[in-house]
Length: 273
Image (cartoon, rainbow, N blue to C red):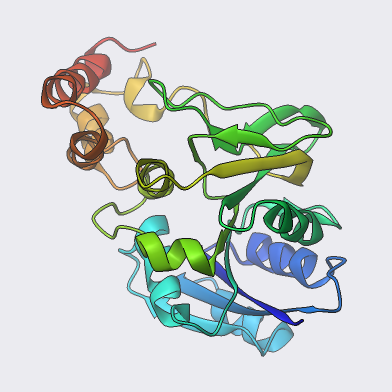
C-alpha cells in the first residue's frame, strides 16, 4: 500500500544549506511504496533561495513569508498548506540537517512498530557520531537530550524539530504547531502536548542525520555584551523570549513555577558566563 509523506521545512537566507538538505532528502534510500511532497516556507530570503530551489527541484511547493515568521511560524504555514487527509505522515526537517542515506526508511519502520506515535530521529555533530546535538528530550528543566540506543526504540517526553515524523492519526488528535511561538519552543510544545494527550514519542535507534549544535552559551548571557543589548537579544525571536516561554510553561507547569522561571531568566541575563 502506498504511503504519502508531506515534508515540511522553513528556510531563510541559507541557500547552500537548504539545497544540500534537499539533495540529501531526494537521494535518500526510500522504499518504493513511499511517495513524498515537499512544502517549504521561504521566510523572506534575499539570497536567491527560492529561485535556486525552483531551478533544481521544480516539484517543491514554495510558500513565502515576509521575514518575520521564523522557524515555528514558518513550519506552521507549511503545515497549514499540507494539512488534511492527503498524507499519511507529516515529516519535519530542518534545512541545516543532513539526513543519512536510510533516514526516511528508519523513520517509517519506526512508525510501523509504533503506529500511533511520533517518531524522532537523533542528529549528531558532523565529525563525531557520538556527540549528539538534537533529538528526543526529557520532561525536566531545560529538557535534557536523551541518547538514542543502538538497537532499540527509546521513549521520550518531547523533542527538537530537526527530524520528526508525525502520523496522520496524531495530527487528527492534537492538530498542528501552535503559532503563538515565533522561533523557539514550538517543537517542545508539540511534544508536551502529545505527552499530555497520551501520545507516545519514540527515538529510533542510532543517528539519522548531522546538524551542528547551536552555541551552548547564548549571546544574551555572554560577558562583554552590553546589558541593554543582552536584554534586546533575549526578547528577540532568536533569543529565549520570556513571554513565549511563560506561555509554554503555563500550559504544562504550575503558575508559581512559571512566574519563578520568568523572573529567573531575566536574572540570568545579569549574571553572564
